[in-house]
Length: 471
Image 1: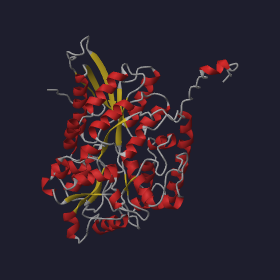
Image 2: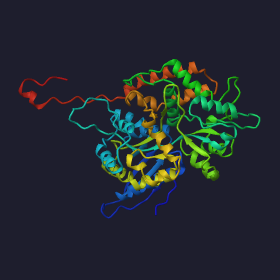
Image 3: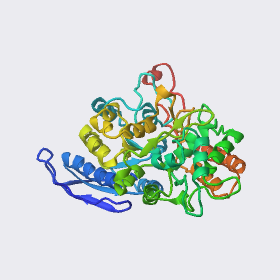
Image 4: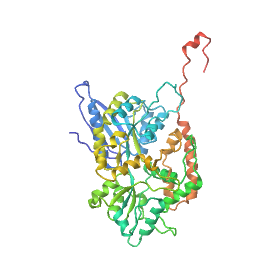
């Protein structure tokens, strides 16, 4: 039985001997990975990855790093010609690496994974196929530069028992959420209706992206090349979230410091009744029930509130990539194929308790999803629900995942802008203008990341009709 401890920022190694079929000396491989918000899921990702590697006769080392640190590590490793064999990255990273020509085409592996696990969620397929942005012959299949691994299940959480005491119901709109915050705020007793973190990173940016779309603010033009943010719509969206934290007179509607809460702080406030409404970016629901099992049935998961321009959701996702400079890309792809098997996904979803959403169709159809009425809500929040006009907010909506879109996605701009308004450091209108300018800057700079394509060689038959043209 494999046993190992996997912690964020800590190097964990699981040793294994090569199988009889492989023979030869022991081999090793390295996986760099962004962490999941739930520690138990990280433990399982580490042990499952090691087990998958063992099946191909490899000793696997797994290192979890925060996204920024992982990008820095990959950049320095690539410059030194010593990239890891595999990496588990966020939603925008694979596009940027593919644009630089750093990745192996894993189309064959992805097709086999889809054949086993069911069709892939379309927005994640688009990200998997995004980049490099060069023309290719029409008869050449589209390459795939990443293999979607999982989405983080999140939701808005409400304590219905506490709301009912004040004759309040679960919110459907941002105005409803604001009314709850105003009604239940009591600074004298440190009791509040609302309290939520606003993390810097993909989860926080996803929340703000869905919020802005709900108020009619699109980040990009349809081509995905420059910012298309409407100033008034952007300011309205940023202000709608800020209104949950402060009343019109500036008095607090949320506990001090709640924008910086971690999972334990959020779940503690929810379980203890300090707040009745919050955002779960992954793991808060399970942690709260672990603290207070009696809340099962009173604690409900909700879709994000609707805005005047629609109903949108988002979810951070992770992707497995195979660097071109890795020591054995074929072996790395074989590890991925063994890792992404249904039985391993089943164990991940159980460990995540709503915070792990497989991106493949067959894997959200098992009995697990009927064990808790909230689990289907977490799944819908990670994919949207077309039957209810509940739309998944793709990274560059309405544009495809272009290179500028990917660069903005990893730049952590949206949550920073939202936090500045919540903290009172900037007005919503000033933050909206600054956000549009920063998106334009990042989008322009990103175009320099695209590697210069290698000129196509002249066809051999030209030598029979005249001198070969000079490029």
